[in-house]
Length: 238
Image 1 (cartoon, rainbow, N blue to C red):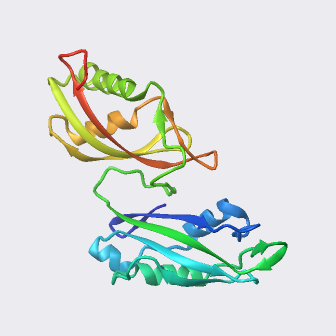
Image 2 (cartoon, rainbow, N blue to C red; image 1 turned 135 degrees about the vertical axis):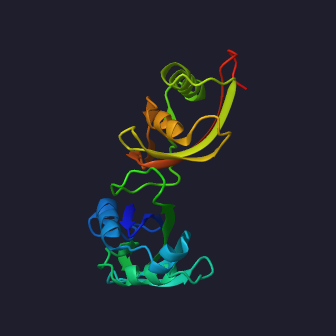
Image 3 (cartoon, one colour; image 1 turned 30 degrees about the vertical axis):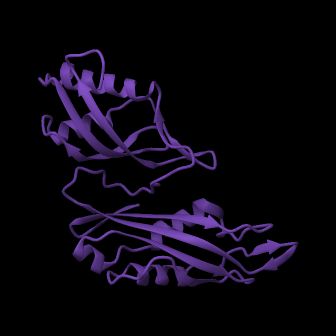
């Protein structure tokens, strides 16, 4: 999720890893309700905003037979930017879950909750609408025609549309492929500076034929990183 706070943009991301039971504990209303609750209640810590820090927080929680969720332990060592305190507050305030059932009997259970807090500089040309994205998915996003199709499209845009003159140019760029096959946002990680970043972002966001990533066979927003070398003077890309 992206939130605008002061002069910053923050991304908040959480996934649920579930232990094996006859019937696993679940958030009331399911995954969609959990994501909505997450977006409305998880807050990026002020300390982390001031220090521009990012952090993944992973906690082992226990859900008792009444559905009460309690943190058992943090998987990673604690830091001093307020992330753990925010997760503790968030978990403590959650409504009761539906408890697990084992051998037909309501039982205590454990699971791991993951929270990815990512600080994003507001000067980057990103969309400001709220959304949730995943860093990985069971089925990663792809494009019809594969890498060759992407290179062909990018080459055409840079040379024919914008009339850039170069023999070879290279880029590493990160973007999110939306569940609706759109490219939600993009920013340049590394380039040879032959093409301005704004043009790269426009071209990548214009990519057609994206196939969204999937989790549990459901299309979701997934972050992707692409490294390209675009060759103009040769029919063969290196």
